[in-house]
Image 1 (cartoon, rainbow, N blue to C red):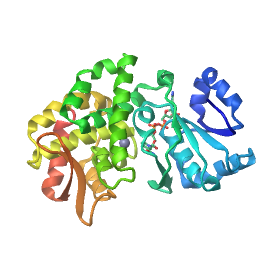
Image 2 (image 1 turned 90 degrees about the vertical axis):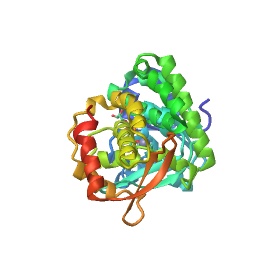
Image 3 (image 1 turned 180 degrees about the vertical axis):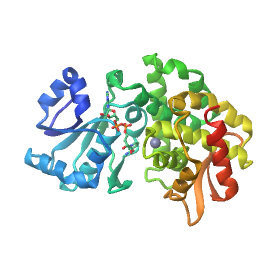
Image 4 (image 1 turned 60 degrees about the vertical axis):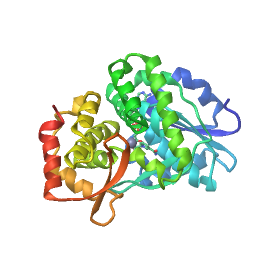
Length: 329
Ligand SMILES: NC(=O)c1ccc[n+]([C@@H]2O[C@H](COP(=O)([O-])OP(=O)(O)OC[C@H]3O[C@@H](n4cnc5c(N)ncnc54)[C@H](O)[C@@H]3O)[C@@H](O)[C@H]2O)c1
Ligand SMILES: [Zn+2]
């Protein structure tokens, strides 16, 4: 399976936790770069260090890279694959649930520059993705829930029936590995279909941002105190509430999805969140057009649609109501 000359970029924590399984792969590789998976590590400022290490360890045109890790290692390797020697093929072994169920397909790299998160990037798909579920055994519960957030999202995009199915099985998902894998594969199939229609984010793929304008605003307002997949779970709940308050979708839609979403973010249901700070962050969202906010809201039948709306006192009041009463209820 591991043929040709390849170099490994790996999450240091994963290397330590899964030494036995990874030993034959590392033995077959020409070199290994270990990276501590932090947001700092995927910054443009850190990239010269990885380039120098790979070059010193003999990486050349025609070699390939193997990434072992979650979204952080994915972003680093994906970006390096695009630019090192003007392009090297790469293989991805995702090790977090978020990466296995969601980010491993989609081909994007997102790199931080200074205080700007994910501002630089490329579309550079791996040649192969190898999913080994055993990596999930060592993940912390909060990381599992972060991955479940993205899985709930794609099922919601597939339609109310798909969401209701995963929602009914939600409590069993963290203990039943076979069930989790069934939904993981389903999540990848749903996402694959959208990406095949729209690889470069021009249309169909935009719905994958459901929960993300609000989620990113929540991440920003809490200085990334809430993990991504959990922030977007709150973001979906808030989007459903906003859709109800703006008269776009019935309150029943919000109420139907709330229990599963709440279960997924429950550890953060009381996390201090300031509606004014979330509103400020929403106004900086890169999808906005001029003063018009852009976000994805459900229609009455649960179809996710891109909607424009002005920031106003009424809108701020809706956010305030959600954070003060609806989120923790
Ligand atoms: N490019 C994309 O398409 C894309 C999509 C989603 C997220 N992202 C980015 O990915 C990052 C988040 O990625 P993530 O949530 O997959 O995780 P991560 O890479 O941030 O890792 C989270 C933590 O889990 C640890 N870890 C990883 N695998 C483990 C394992 N098997 N056992 C124990 N611990 C393990 C890591 O060391 C780290 O401490 C963010 O920077 C986000 O912007 C990118
Ligand atoms: Zn996401």
